Image 1 (cartoon, one colour):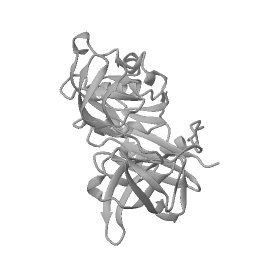
Image 2 (cartoon, helix red, strand yellow; image 1 turned 180 degrees about the vertical axis):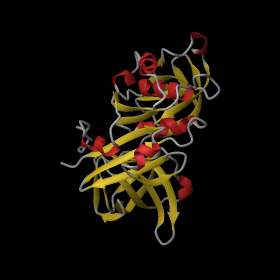
Image 3 (cartoon, helix red, strand yellow; image 1 turned 90 degrees about the vertical axis):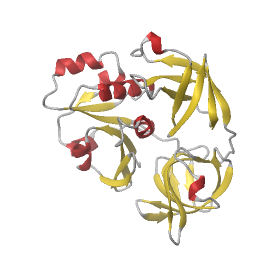
Length: 299
């Protein structure tokens, strides 16, 4: 059985480099490893804490976390809040030598990270641990795009993950939220040409009928055309660490599904500056607040 593992990592680059090779680098760095048919992908938020969406984009797809704790600071606090709100319940903490265990225990108490295993072993040992996550191999095709560029003699190339179904050569899909129809000209996995890629695969797609300037992180290739919405309505849930005085209407940014868009919160509705795809939930961000991640809106 093929296994595809996706980790989020923070402050653990030396650890990660012993497991996987650097593949793609921007505000997030993506590392990859292939053992037979099994793959490991690791997202690291290299522009965090300066850029909060670097954190939310890197964490979104992860099924497990690798958190290096070398300092007890605001950044670690935002990692804890994001992990809670995004329900990232599985992970490992790699404690630094100067971190007092009892202090870390008190900080993590009541959070999902309280359950994370303290890990002091060698990086490669991590790959031997049981893995209980699976992908939706059936159903309709959904491919989330995270990077894109122009390649001479090839054209528009997009990198991303097959979230469900499978990607197939010559397949026509809708590029949501624009709704434009595009075709997959060719597929690569780990620099090898393939005719199709199952759910869980990281893929490079040569696309027909779309230019690079029509793409953005968080675009989704799907079998159905979806109309973006002007506002998001749902239950607003604030994190327990957010003071009551910050639980107010006003400007917010929605973060999730590798998107980061501005809107205005009023009650249980966020009116967007520009249309957004309606998903099950988004984080609520206030870039100038402390903490910046204040909660989420859940449909």
